[in-house]
Image 1 (cartoon, rainbow, N blue to C red):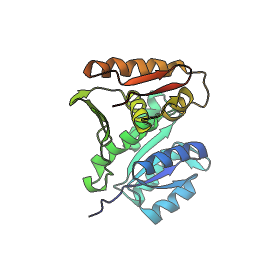
Image 2 (cartoon, rainbow, N blue to C red):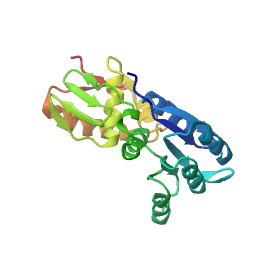
Image 3 (spheres, one colour):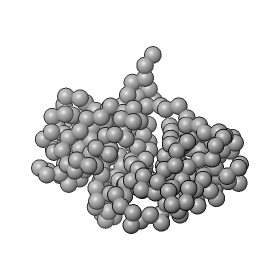
Image 4 (tube, rainbow, N blue to C red):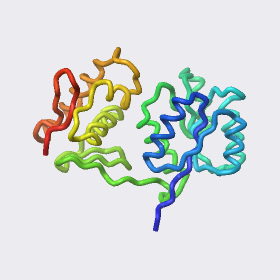
Length: 230
C-alpha cells in the first residue's frame, strides 16, 4: 500500500525562498503548492485543503497571521508554521498564539523540515508523514525520519547544522565538495565571506565521529572535503 504524502502550502512572496522550501520539501516527499499572496493562498487552500501551511508573515497584500486565521477557518486541523524576519519576543509569542510553530529568518532548511514534521506528528496520523530509508555510509547511519545519527551502532549527538553538513557529505560520498557548495547548501550563503564557518563545523563533526571509528572526513587542501573510502 502506498503511503499518503502530507500536503504543504508554502506562502512566500520571495521567489528564491519559495524555491528553496519547495525543492527541500519535495525531496522529503511532501506534496507542495505555493502562493505569493494572501489571495492566492486562500484560493489554493480551498482547492487543495493542505495538511500544513508555511506562512511568511509579511505578504504584499496582507498579513500572514491574519491569513493563518482564514486558513484555519477553511481547514481547522491544518498545521500552521510562520516564517518571518521579525524576532522580537512579542512577535514570537503572538505568532505562537495563532499557529503551531514560529521560525525566524534566515533559517536552516533542515530545521524547517524537522519542525514541520514535529508539528504534523501532533496534528496528523502517522501514515501521512513521508518516511525515508536511513542514509548509510560504512558504519555510519543517518535516520532522516528522526534526524538521528549512529556510528558503529552508537548514537552521535549532533546539532541541526552538524547533521545537515554530515548528510550533505554522505549524499555526495565519493566526491570532494567545495566550501562554496557547503556554504550554499548547508547555510544558504551565496558568497565566501563566511567560509571559516565550514572549517569550524568540520572540526565539530570530527570531534564527535572520530572517537567511534577511523577518521571519516577527509580534507583536499585548497578544494574542499569528502569522506574516506570504506
